[in-house]
Length: 333
Image 1 (cartoon, rainbow, N blue to C red):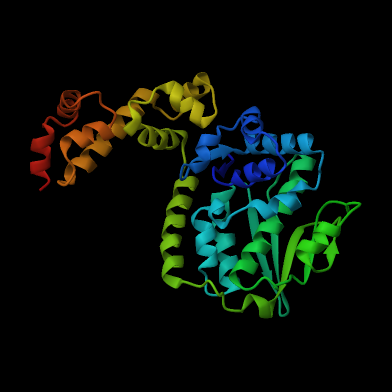
Image 2: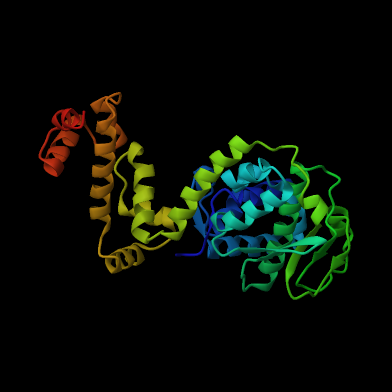
């Protein structure tokens, strides 16, 4: 599985750049991001592009502690269903357990560990980022975002009992103190956010069990897709998203997966398939699903599958199944 992040996560960086009157679109594209994908559900960006983006942000702003500031520009919806599920939890501990269970959906390389003792609960996190400056920023954002989510669920006055950072103490820690409002430890062996056990047992003001369970189903599906994600399945997913706008080309796919045509062809070959085969498979599977729904007109199905006209769709479907769309619809009734 290629290391990646959820496409909605960088939206906080976009807002941060705009707050500094920096051309966010130019910075994103320079870093290898197509900003249009940030609003596409379940789309993902390669981890390397994310690191390049942050490295460029540090270079442009000259602020090595900008991760602390960036935490003010996120929205829970930037975390997709995880943000909603977290805030819908019954207690803070339940919310933290959801965060641990589903953190890889947001960042496939992120590991969160919960350690509970009689008096405290430690939230340990590590994104395994080799670039020192980017690792520092990512560590700051993780803590700032998690703490803000906890405060949204409980109350703004919630404070950790201690926060530990893996890097040396900055010259100015005033913003750290203003955000975390607790003892700060630097040059520690692990990145840690610690809460009292009593606070973790408190009921969330935003609790909604039905909403939480509904979003858990979405998260479990996303997690399953991510863990079993072959390149072929990723290509099929992109093809399905593109079909209503017309038949996607190999060029369309490589642009959205951030790789060259040669790399795509080689990796698909290693998996025993190719782009044309995946396009046909995606169309056929969708066609059979759509036709089974008698409420969908055949003309609309033809459009949804990217065919130039209905007759082209009918000929293709007959070749796939031996039946016309109408005959197939009758057979599944």
